[in-house]
Image (cartoon, rainbow, N blue to C red; front, side, top):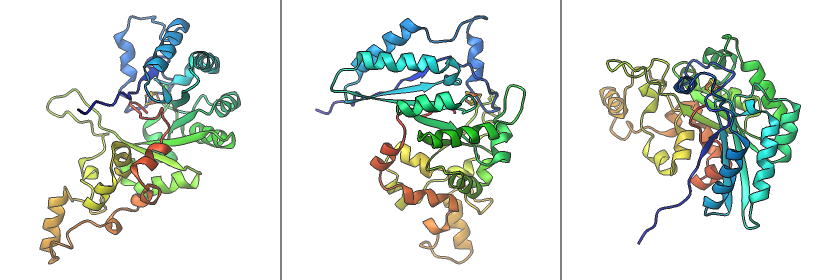
Length: 306
Ligand code: SF4
């Protein structure tokens, strides 16, 4: 009889939905309104220790992953994480190992953070939506000020400190039109591990349920069969997702076949091939297998909110 895998992942919201930014597409900030005014969202010490102890005990494998999320999880301050690491060490049995991952917007990262994150081998997911004009389109402060400069500075500081950083790019209606520029930019600044998270935002209006900031459906066409075969798991498919067609007006694969037939090309020619795809598919050479991707992804970066 087959048994279900017992591996699971918990996102720890150190400050609930509290964040210092006001990204236009953030679905999470409003969660603050679900609580009474004046609520202290900071995870208290007693709950923190109970959680750490129980999470270690409940993890069946050798690796215990801690995923610190928000809001902006670093708003609790570096001391909170020093305490968390000390508690992890206190409760860790000899046969287990701990991996910590933080998803951050990068705006609070300074030398003290870098030193701590490097020393404790944290994996960082850093939200960056591409070059300045694309990133700043939606990722702004509470005062609607741009954040790109701070995020790139944080990235460079983390890299200098030799902290493992994944760049997480939310793919929305604007940057989806510039996949090559986004990809090249990420590479130019030294990004080695990239993740692309398609934005699908609700409006709450039953007649028009998907917000226009969402990634357009044309970008979510099915992958060609050979790529799908390689895309063995969810993580890898996410890397392959950013594949908007350059041919504007193509709605789906069936539509594309119709266009090819109309242009006198046979059904074979109508199959999408990698070289016909947008250059953003250059991410592919890095992807050797599903296991390869899993190894590369920081344990804490299966993001719910960027
Ligand atoms: S998307 Fe992330 S960084 Fe932006 S406001 Fe929401 S929680 Fe903060």
